[in-house]
Image 1 (spheres, helix red, strand yellow):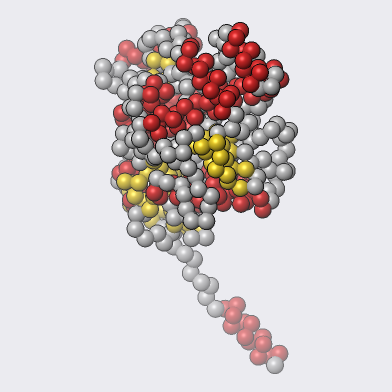
Image 2 (cartoon, helix red, strand yellow; image 1 turned 90 degrees about the vertical axis):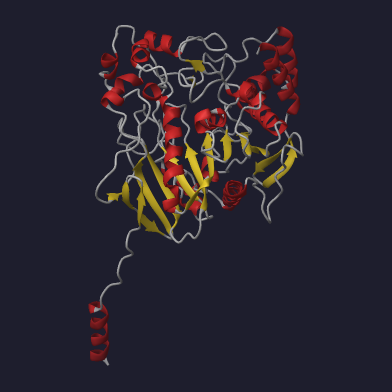
Length: 507
């Protein structure tokens, strides 16, 4: 018996190992890509969608990517775009950094049949930080729901949003300038249109979704002539809505300096484009450009031709299904007395307006705790939802109010800015604290609503609470709570009405 067992064991040990699964290969316009398959999801990372914007191509519109002759390994992420330290933001991702950073990543079901909806993620970070390579934005759990997920890097800070008279002097009359990060995003959507079919995606069913500055980028795609037809649904997560852009060569609508004047003030001692392009990339990080202060929100005349809110009011936005929402305690840490562009947005209040708002917030303490979030996020989101619904397009408004028990942040009456991201991606495993069943139910619900919306333009599905369409259910939203999604009237509407009246008076 011993000999028989020994011989059996030897036979097993000497038997050939199963063949490893061959890596998937797809052919795009530039050449073949070699991906990876894990648990039924194929991933392709670090795919160039534009030529590296380095050397003489710094501060130039993106150019089509160069072709490659042999199969290109797509098993690793590309570099981060040049940016300051992320200070622990999970939406940044690991280094290295480089100006050669215009890459994207694709996740798709390995056995997909037929064209699938496509979801293109635009990361936030004030257009100064972030990347599509962060583990937080791993697309596999969304792809399991039958979609193709794309995450994108785009130029940031002064490398992405900058102009100077010397740069303007070298451009031809029809050459776009200044808004290079937005040009990159449009170029990535053009690449998706031309190539996503190779991954099983449907180029005629593309959803753009983004958070914070990424949400602000989505609102600009909604009004961009260059982006028209490149996407078919849009999702804005905490993406402002009444922000003011900076034109290249004239003051902004609220009197801020032009982008060229800002560039001249920054590099006053440089007179040629060659001198500007010789500046080390890391030098351009300090002092940091101001996102809401107008340095990174640009009206270039071609990609973005006007401010978002007036364009929506005129009915000039893309006529696509639209989801928009905010978190219940966005900027809970920021006060209207802070010395920042966000602290300035209530400066034009009259004495009577301020007294009325104090009363609506239950006193000065409540005002200080919540008014910046309402001014910057909540009322602008409601306003864009109203305008889009008024134009006759499917519109869905949400409020995220899920606060996990183990959150290390102080309790501040709601969900802080950016805290919805791991729920949308169903990636709770990427957080720094343990999540429970309640949080997983919330993540499952959000990812299901988001992917259903990408599929059909309507987030509703069997077995989930109904999300009202703003066209029929005026001023009702879906609130994501610790106890599950709830269809309800917009909370604190009386505060938002007063803020709306303030904006109408000053603008």
